[in-house]
Amino acid sequence: MFDCAKDVRAYHDQDVILPKSEQDAMRDRRDSNRTRLRNGLDKAGKPKPIEFVKQGSYAMKTMCHDPDNDYDIDDGVYFHKEDLVGDRGAEMTSLQARWMVRDAVDDGKFKRAPEVRSNCVRVFYEKGYHVDLPVYRRVVTDTVFGEEVHYELAASSGWKRSDARDVSDWYEDQRAASADGIQLRRINRDLKKYARSRYSWRGSILSGFGISVLMTEKFRANDREDRALYDTMVAIRDRLNWNLVVAHPVTPGDTITSGSDDAKARCFREKLTEAINTLEPLFDADCTREKALNCWDKVFATTFFSERLEEEQRASVAAPAIIGSAALLSATAAAASAVSSAGGGRHA
Image (cartoon, rainbow, N blue to C red; front, side):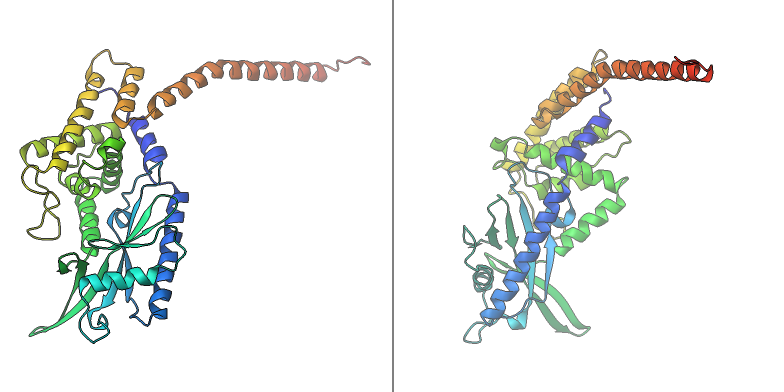
């Protein structure tokens, strides 16, 4: 396979990973959102949250740069179960808890008002991204062994036992157990970037979380970044050829996909096959750097790789002229020094 390892790594570092400026902006929005929610709950005389927990790709650090700022930031808000009671003293339903959070976070300054969704409250920002606020309650149960604590999500079906921290912990455990946890996260981002590289794919392809689960199953570490990405693509595609079901990693009996012929998993499998086929010329004996980089451009629907080659070519053309100029200046300086050392000059 033609070696484009440095190019694939450069693409990740320059176009895939979330720029620090955007990371900082998201963190500021998240913190402002938390303050807004606390103030709104206090003003309405509602219970205070016991904690906020970042989750999803934001917590797993697998978010990818999106030119349209189409980001989904998950920030869970947690309450004590005994605090979530209605006006008449009855236990809050999951819907009532979500509405309580929605009303508290809406200070009237948003261009688009926050909305209650099936499993969260969504806050929209003008820049394009949104913050999802899943609502949880902390449940303490007395048992013969003492107190046991678990958490429940305010879902559309009611209070559902769940804690998104379990997913973040699971991902870190998988990275730690892998051959190269740092590379695993990079390749994870690359595959998520690929899955969102065409707008027409976005509503029909497997979720980023589903891709992350498959990554932990089939990651293929390699000293060459391009080979690690390619081999992982093949391994995941082959796995999906065998089985399209993707199990939830921390919820027993639950799946991320829907049924044995999930359309989104099938779509991801088809797109991986397209990418693998696009990269076939890299295995030809007469493959050139130009051909190889054009193939990677096609995979990611970008011009990054071919532009990288153009920059190299411009630099190689400019280099001799720069070296020549430096040599001429050096020779001139040496001649002047020689004249000066010999006592040469107009008035000698």
